Every structure is written in C-alpha cells, then in structure tokens.
Length: 286
Ligand code: NAD
Image 1 (cartoon, rainbow, N blue to C red):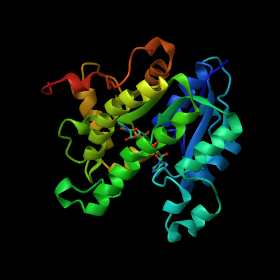
Image 2: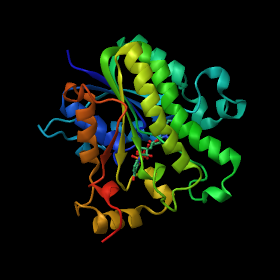
Image 3: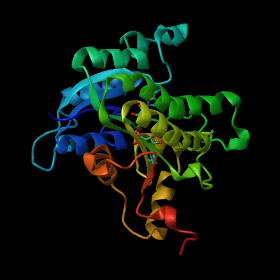
Image 4: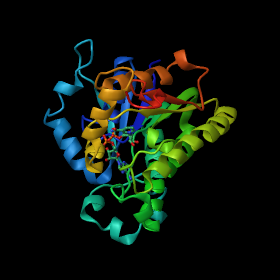
C-alpha cells in the first residue's frame, strides 16, 4: 500500500510545503494538504485554473495530484477556542471544520489513517521587530502559530497515524545562533520547536512508534520569507559563505523530507537535520 501524507502549510507553489508534497508524491505517496483558511480560496482557485500545472510536474512527467485540500488554522485546537470576531470574519465564515481537532477528525472520516505528517507553517506578527521591541502578544502569537501548532497537530493526528510513520517540521538556524532581523519571538519559537522535536520524539516513539524530526532549512524566497524582509540578503550571505556555493532549492529540502519520512530513515528520530548547503557548520564567513 502507498503511504498517505498530510502536509500542513501549503498555500502556493513557492514554499517548502509544496516542494515536500512534490517529493513525497514522486515517491508514491498520496497527498492531502492543510491550507490556512484566509489563503484557501485563492489556492483552490489557482489549482483549479491550472496556475500551478507547470510546478505540479513530477520527474516522471506526470502531474502531482492533491487528493484533498483541508482548510486549517493551526492556532485553534477546537471550535470552543475560536473568538467570535474570527468566527464571523468573512474569510473564515465561508469554511468550516478548520480547527486542528476537526481537521484530524475529517481526515479520519475521509481516509481512516495517515503515515506522514508534515508541519510547514509559521507566523510571527511582529517578526520585523527586534526581540527587545516585541510585545508579549506578538511573542506568544509567534509561539502559538509556529511551535504549539506542531504539538497540537501531532497530538490530534497521532491516534490516526500508522505505527512506523514519521512527522517532519521546518526550522531555522536563528533558533541557536544570532540572526539579526528574525525577530518578533520567531527565533524563540524555532528554539521551542527544536526542543519539542526531541521530547515529542520520545513520547510519540514510545507510545506509537512514530518518528519526529525537524529540518533546519537554508533561506528560500517563499511568501513567508519575503514578508520578513531580509531574505535576499540571507540568500546572498549563504552563496558567499556556505561550503556549497549554490542557491538552495525547495526541491532539495523536499527530497530530504522524503528521505526522513521513508523507511531509509527508520532509526532517525529527535533530530535537527540541516539542509542548508552546510552554512550551519561555518564559524566565520570567508
Ligand atoms: P510559506 O509561505 O510557503 O509557508 C508558510 C505557510 O504557513 C503559508 O502557507 C501560510 O498560509 C501558513 N500559515 C501561517 N499561519 C498559519 C496558521 N495559523 N494555520 C495554518 N497555516 C498557517 O513559507 P515557507 O518559508 O516555505 O515556510 C514553511 C516553513 O519553513 C516554516 O516553518 C518556515 O519557518 C520554515 N523555514 C523557511 C525558511 C525560508 O527561508 N523560507 C528557512 C527555514 C525554515
């Protein structure tokens, strides 16, 4: 039987989530995605109108099929958590069952089980502010959307994951080294995500035989990264200073994710795996 993957955080064809979906599809997995509610309409319309057809192309010439797109807002665990103004917001009221618990229930109803869970989402409303200028609200919002969202997804999907399955999230080196410009508590959120990767690897491994890893990815010009504002500088810095002097492609991260999700990685869990042309290993730029 082919594997089934749920990838949270796909809303266009530029980010890591899309590339991971493609690599998993190329390896034979069935693809389900979770798309942020406010981005759902445009994503589904673009898919339907063939706007992504070129980037849906797999190495064998076929087009990646997304079996189902689920609306998702990973900062809410269940309907009781959703504030009234969000519930009645035009962009949200058109969709239903988009809290984490409800999405897991829908996937179970539709497909029974999954094998692979990917978390490729982050949000920090004050990301462009230095940590010293970050509000409590902004800091907690970054942690909620970028770190706890993974805990919640794992918690709700674990019961429908087949033993031997794997989960993957995306992190960034700002968790462990100073990267000025990655603010708003996003550096803190990535530190939490990496620490949780270890603790959750233990808990999910012992309880369900599920592996938990995170990919520390190098810079990519995604929609989210462009919003931070320093992505071109980071790409140039990597080109100049990394051991491998080439631009990182999303596909390279997708392929590493496909490896980590596969039986080839059956003894790897609790790990932070760098897919960054080696930049993390440098002490000084030369
Ligand atoms: P992206 O814009 O493709 O992906 C981020 C996604 O998160 C978007 O689709 C957005 O709609 C979604 N999202 C935001 N808030 C959400 C919520 N509350 N519920 C559900 N979805 C929500 O950008 P990306 O850069 O590919 O980001 C994917 C992951 O990769 C993130 O964790 C990011 O931190 C990480 N990462 C990115 C880079 C980079 O340079 N782009 C480097 C290292 C790590």
